[in-house]
Length: 478
Image (cartoon, rainbow, N blue to C red):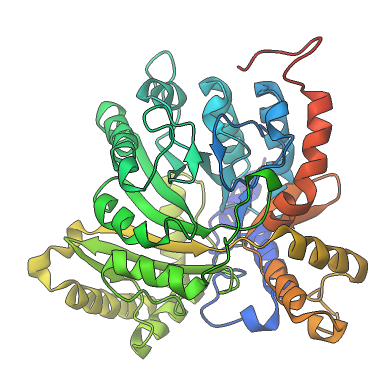
């Protein structure tokens, strides 16, 4: 490549918003329903949304009630070659659709059933396609597995940082230490054990971790949500995510009464655990009927949200931030990130005084300098509400027949379709979905609720034929 070509390539790579990311963000913004296109909306501005894998390792060694897996999931064997190959195809397609710098979960069944070398290869593949990967697990593995994943046989680090979403709650059965937990308190030692593994990885090898804690919420454990937060907020977890149970997956694992409470009741329990009211309108991630998110930090025992949505100065700073730093920095070397940040500051210098003003307000809300806010522990609270499979199937069928109501240039919104209000809401939420799966064969990014509620059953039936756990030519779990 000529010198001019290299200069042009460097200029494009260090832009505040590279062309492939700009295209992905523009597409996502145009797909959003009008009600979700708010000044607080991050989708289409900071992110095109999160992504997840599908059909890569559906098997799990737990029995949970509920569980979004179809009834055939555990008939499919674990096969590392299949996993890495599927991850390659799906992430390559997602990169073409959305550009670089998007979050992606390595998810299916239980990720720790993968051989650690295959697991590492899948993560490396995701990074190569500009994804920021997170492994989804129940956490019932030992430190030896985590170390073998993150560190090669020669002692060299495979990754400088890894991310895990760890799902621990009393709806799960099969954990080695607490096989059939009766309440959430019985699992706090397990939560601490998992946290300690990631702390040890940092101490032994200098590998940083981002660990999220996931919990399914049912009528049986909703009142235990505050205790889970209070008892575990000083561990390694940087996110507490709560998912009210939905009627999706294997019907054999459903219980009656999942919907006896609403979103406000779950959020109230989360606020009780956080010890403060949690604002979720100042920064919006998709449809608020699906996702409520509060970003913030724990300063000693005080939780301080990043945005005070009642303070117009904070909202103006948010708007400046969106303008100065469009898109995510993503997976890139630190020097490249530094150049991109510098270009952003030069292009939008007013972000500097706005940021300093925000920092002063954050320190004041933290309790002043005596509270040592520079030692704050970043912490995010999330509630993500999956939708029931029957509603999703009806909505998806209409969307496939009529086209997305948010297709650019389409004049009529979903309210003109004349459908039941419940299905209308489902269509709107699917259109604003922040969590989707790549389908290269059909050219679609499919909402996760559609994947689990509509597509998984047939996909897993096909995988049983391709990768049977038993029978001629089948392999043992690797």
